[in-house]
Length: 329
Ligand code: FAQ
Image 1 (cartoon, rainbow, N blue to C red):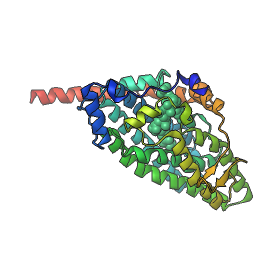
Image 2 (cartoon, helix red, strand yellow):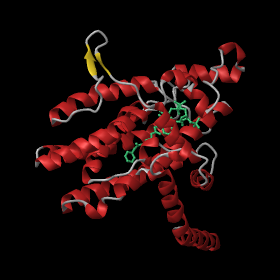
Image 3 (cartoon, rainbow, N blue to C red):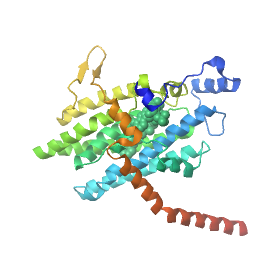
């Protein structure tokens, strides 16, 4: 039912018998753990899948600066402000590595950015929620960067070389981001009753969107099967979501916070936590552009792009002049 709301059903995984000899050889290289590099042969569908996923990932990093950027001027201490500023700048850097990785697949950066600004390309659902209090900054670091790390560590081993290599550095920085988020939550939870209540309120609002961030249930994920065959993804959406829940519940207990899910329970037979039903209507509503902040986020990116036009023009003019000088010398 939900898959239909995004598009028509899961993509079909091509059986070996339908592949050309070149495609079979490509699949054998992937199965053998050999990285695919930009100039290697790759099926058009593999290239398109990478462009889609890596560009959406890049856009998420860039749009993802906005919710936390909202608190840079209001951070409670100079130290917290410096840490937050560094984190938000890191996210910009991640976006730039990833835009470069997309360029290796033959798409210009201008086109990729245009797809974001026109609303054609997606970015992560999570960044369409507002940051109402300082505790939201702690919750984002703890839960959102925590989810991002669980998703991204395996991508360091994905089949496409430039994407895998970009993820290594990104993951190192994400680890710092998660720790700073947890540290904010810890300070609030050890503070006054009002501060602890603020931390609980942030957890209440960010918990379910953090679970949704891992994407649709496996039964409704149209790209997972083929992406896993190609090792663009190494784990399914549900596997990573479960990992996130199992990792985060003990951390919430340490903080003395309650996860807002009455069905959350350790299941000794599965060796995992069981959790309640995700509101998939909310998820699809957000990714279709109707979340609490979608319009605001896109407007902010469009304004920033327009206001940055003179910088791009100046950089291009400088590069042209530099090239002319070099040619004349
Ligand atoms: N939001 O068939 P699947 C971060 C779309 S970075 C929006 O399962 P797939 C760092 C999906 O695109 C966060 N759309 O798709 C940070 C597809 O639509 P399409 C971003 C979503 O690709 C922290 C459709 O639904 N991370 O947080 C979402 O196999 C703090 C069907 O879904 C990445 O991008 C969603 N949550 O699996 C920054 C990691 N989920 O394209 C700042 C790399 C699904 O057909 C502050 N990406 N959709 O129109 C991935 O691992 C995968 O792309 C998934 C989705 C797991 C996100």
